[in-house]
Length: 278
Length: 306
Image (cartoon, rainbow over all chains, first blue to last red; front, side):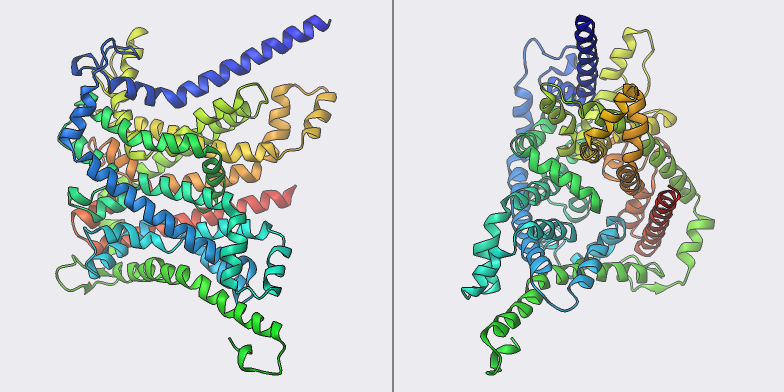
């Protein structure tokens, strides 16, 4: 009888692994196929092999020749870096205030602030474009950095949630010692919310890296363009030159896959919370 | 700030006052940014929706003309609305069903499950633009992977992105592929919150695996499911990046993938009809708010009925 139970258990585990492999394959095959395509000759992209016999690394070299890849890479890193730093700083500061500092109208203000999450990008993109035009920031890096710099409702919400989990004794002792609110925030509490900082930083970085509509509306010059914009321009210019297009796609993907591999836990945690704001 | 000049007040009130002022100071940058980049644009957009404006000549007040044109004079609006509804349903329904199953499988405590979760969640980090380019390659009629594989079982090449009725289907496939990981993350998190004793009790009562899934897991996930549905609808309804790159900025072939997001972009930044596009944006906003409110009401009612 015991043997039969074990056999049934093994059968069930087999079914589970089969399902898991199927699901993983569905998630992965477009990326693998693209990776394989990026190493093929133009006339062999239709050959259904994942490993081309003679990998054409020259496709990658061609990407660098056809588009100012490293310039765009640098731009994207600068935009993502600035916005991420700003987000982490201002969201944690406001999150701390909303969680811990008493001031009149705090809860009302927080709920109203959170309410702005309901406003979709669809409604704000046109007036934001006109605003940028008004201050003369269209087609400048400022347009890519400043709007995202001073925090978002979601980031503040996320930080507030983490600050609320810290024990009150932590700051009470510091206040009795005469620490100012800034010192309490900067020296005492901030080191304790490193996980939250990681979550927000990864999420912001990925969002800026992948952003498309805003750069599309804002930027015309290659010298300040982002990678997503560069890829779409490349695709428009070299229609159906699959190996080169796939090589460019992989080059944009690799930095993100590395970040994902390193910070997967923080990223997925952030995604689970971010659904809250759409 | 207030307590510091008052000598009679003990030292702690002083620090209290400092904390009070600091509160406002610390939230000020965020609130200022929201006022400048969100509230002002929101109001300005509403103002624009009653104007005719190309940015180069002064705006001209036209009352409800823009809205009237949308409903009565612009056949493209109805096409875009219909396409958007088809796209939203074609994305959200499969996404919810698939992610429910995927989350159920990923919830199994088997060896190596972490690796599988990592792989399945990977598309979360991939930009819609890169994915659209990659899927174009997969959908390519002559030498795309899908047609190669279909050729093995004797099905002729399908013009995935070229034939109008196939184009919308292909768009939904990519959209589902892109949205399933998010829905799975949320549902999996909710599943992990279900106490194991419930399953234990059901097992003792003789309920099979499938039965347990449908009579314990699914009902307890209702909140998370509702949440996933609302967010997915909001996202699909405003789809832009994916459509723009996969089938082009005109919503082709013909008008097969001409969704509201594309219409908005085209009218604003292509035709420079900023008033008209703003009217469209506010209409989309109104539809989304209504949908969300209805869903929340339905959710509350079904909770009360229990």
